[in-house]
Length: 385
Image (cartoon, rainbow, N blue to C red):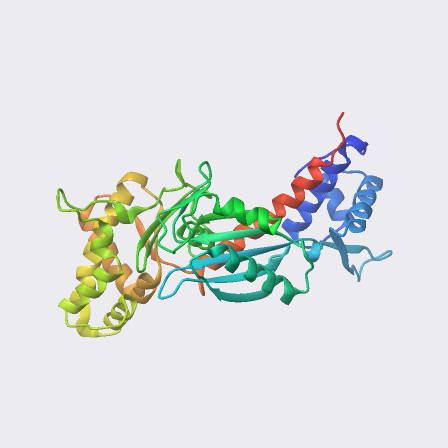
């Protein structure tokens, strides 16, 4: 239980920020609930709620009933107190952006998609304007934009690296977007954000730490250590596709289990498909195609052995289009092959996230950052001693 004390002007903003955090955590609370959770006095709690509702940060959503005495007001954080946008930058087939605008409670308010030309800034600005217009928000009402990138963001250099989408590697792009939008702009690797979705909505919610390996057109690795993502000194942690798999041959892990390699392997087993995930799906559903899945699982296990040996995670999650297409049929084979490769007993599971894990993870990150931003604003308003 969090104990707060004091009703002086110096503590007022701290009391307000802590109370708002509790409303965001619990959903709905009465003033009695808030007194129990904070330790604040009855008059102080009433004053805190008066200020939060007056500022539009909290609202009355109902009244208690059925008990003795007068009914009590039930409060919640005001969903309209802040809005954030999650944008996923896609490179498959054609560069485009998919964006979702959500309120402070995380509820989706608007969704849109736009193609990206050589210069991404006008596309992002146009998408943000479209989403805000759909939601009926005026200028400056979007406080935060979270970008999900098929590359890594180096915050110290302000540069996006390892990205193949034209225009996105321009130095200063993220800062430029923040200045043009008048909002906070955060950027993170798409696989990192998929891991965030896995932590909150998938199979990794109960484990202490896990690694998520992304198999699609390219490869990626996200490392969750106790709920915190390891990003590296320059944001490049997890670029596992660049790991060499042979001495002096210029071959890396992408050449072994990247999308084109998976299609080529399928073709050698008589499976022709338009995409690697289609080839894997066809094999997973065909009793006579086990040899292809066995060969693919052996290649995947080769890469996972390094992950397991270096990180020793409680769980490795197989994610991305190829892993989803293979499902349990592929995961079972990968588990067997990994255990034949390394003595470490690492659990393997297929992603449990439905829909678009990258965009969902970006939404989780955006809501978290928006909440922290609003609470921090209240704390910073505390008068100096």
